[in-house]
Every structure is written in structure tokens, then in C-alpha cells.
Amino acid sequence: MDERTSKRAPTTSVVAERAAALTNDQGGFPAQEQQPPGLTGRMNPRPDHGEETYVGHDRLAGLRALITGGDSGIGRAVAIAFAREGADVAISYLPEEQEDAEETAEWVRRAGRRAVLLPGDLREEQTCADVAERAVAELGGLDVLVNNAGFQMARTTGLEELRTEDMDRVFKTNLYAMFWLTRAVLPHLGRGASIINVSSIQAYQPSQTLLDYASTKAAINNFTVNLAAEVGERGIRVNAVAPGPIWTPLQPATQEGEHLESFGGDTPLGRAGQPAELAPAFVFLASPSEASYVSATVLGVTGGKPVF
Image 1 (cartoon, rainbow, N blue to C red):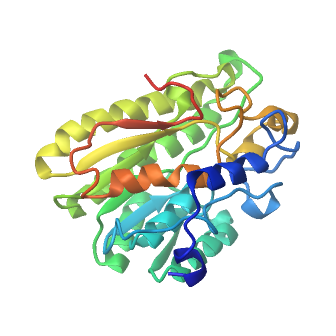
Image 2 (cartoon, rainbow, N blue to C red; image 1 turned 135 degrees about the vertical axis):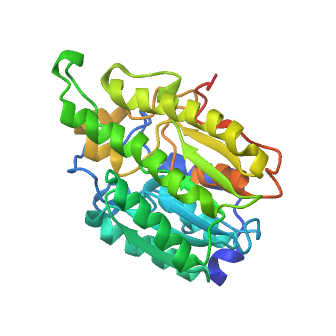
């Protein structure tokens, strides 16, 4: 682990102040746009993934994790936190996100843990099988699967104008890939292992402009509960984290730029969250000791919006 980071233990208020400082008075960010899937280096301001703040305590010592969408945003924050908690990490990402993936891998290695890069489009069933096989082979097994990869596209038109190819991108990325990859990974998970899916506040408070995306997030909640019941007797826990509005490359890549100026301002806390603020929830759910009796749960990290 990087000595500069391992010995710095910021309080929760310091981390929150850092996150608040990255937003404007309306809770949002400067207007900006990118092409999907978006890259971290082009964001203004850059998100906080915990690079300078997250401190590990060996909660995941010796574990091996596969994180989809692990190159940036929430996935990068989770990868950094897992590594500093003692886990080796395999990162799945789109080939066009190589730049971000390399940077995330470097943070994992700075923590003294192994980083495995697995490019590929998870909308293809064979890619999911290949990613699972390579992760297991290169890490020597697998203890944690984080199904984080996702796609959305805010729309100004209604259902009648929704194209099938757009639906396919959302449903295959958010749902099919989760089914395919989890199915491929399950034979390699033993007692004490865990699966963590990424839901959303959209599963509870769906936006009119995210009809297809919100539908997938509601389905992920059901998948989490159903799978937890199926594999509980094998000692495998299945949970989900439901983020609220989080500042990641997905936002400038899938919304009109001016919408970002108030992004997150409608939460009770009055701002969007930073990826670093999600990571502790994933660490808790992945911990075989601290969350040993937690399964079929959706943990909300939403800035105050309710998840029930």
C-alpha cells in the first residue's frame, strides 16, 4: 500500500467537504458533453475516487474480486478500496476505455495488490464467459463479483420513439451481461463468497427520461433477492448497492450538457455524490466477516432519497 495513503485517515467530514467542493451552488457541475462511454480525464472537475483519501483496514485481505465497469466512476472507486483492503482485482471494461482502465490498475498496484485488465464488450455472451474464465485463471480463483457495468441514455422523446437498438444496448449491458457473467462465475464461488449488483435510485423513483434504464434497475433488485434465495444454502451472499446521482463519466456522456449544472441538486443533501462515497458500501457487503449475515439487501447511497 502507498505509504502516503495508508497513514492518512481523513474523517468523514473531510471526505464530504471534498465532495461538496467539487459541486457548484446548485449542486451540479459545469455544462459539458462527451461521447459514450466517456473518459475520466475529460471531466471538469475530475471525480474523487478516493485516490488520496481511502484508507484500508485489511477487511478483504486475500480475497479476489472481479469488477465490471471497473475502469472509471464507481467501479474505479471500488477497485481502489478493495485493493487497499487487501484484495486482488480483475477489471472488466470496454476496449475504448483502455486509458481509464490502465489508470485504475496503477492505483491497485500502488496498494500492493494484483490488477488484471479484461477488455471486452459484455453485451456478447461469449465475452462474459471469457471474462469469467480469465479472471479465475489469472487471480487463481474468485471470491467477489461486482456487477457494476451499466448504460443509460437520457431521452427527450417518449416510448413511441424508443428504438429497439437503443433498448438492446441498455438491456444487454445492464441485465443480460449480469445474468451471463454471474452464471459463468457461480461455479467458482465457494462458501463465504459474495455477489454485489448495482441498482439505482431509479428503481424507486424513476425519471421519465430514463424509462428503459429505470426498468433494468428495478429488475436488478428482483434478481438480487431471487439469486440470494437460490444460492444461500451454498453460503454465497447476494446484495446490491443503489446509488443516487453520482459524478461519473456516464453523466456527461449520456445527458445534455446544461442538465449537469443542477445534477444532484434535488437530493436532500443538495448535491451529487462522488464515487469515493460509494466504495465503503461495497467493502462492507464484500466483507466475509462484517456482512456475514447480510444477503438479499439493497443498500442505498442516494444523498437522502429513500429506497423502499
